[in-house]
Image 1 (cartoon, one colour):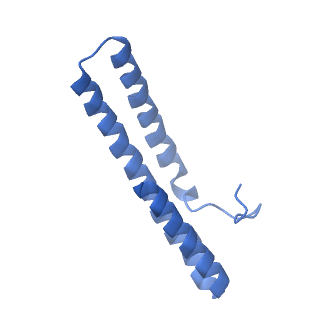
Image 2 (cartoon, rainbow, N blue to C red):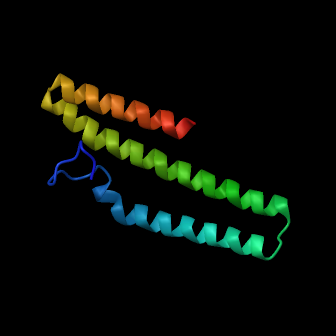
Length: 102
């Protein structure tokens, strides 16, 4: 739990949790497949193609989480009318997007 989240506050992705878990399981399977490819001395370009697919899947997952955060947590801060809460959530999203782009 983050300092910004109270014990009773729902996270933004709660409604889509099952879908996120399914996507993560698929990504986990892809990573295991890459491991097998390396164990089996698969051609480098084929391994890199699969690494690229995992990266794309993780980026899509990240985008979904950021979108859910904005639709839930940032929206709630705006609805509260509290300028400090709004600024905190905007800064949080900005820092997160910055980390994702590195």
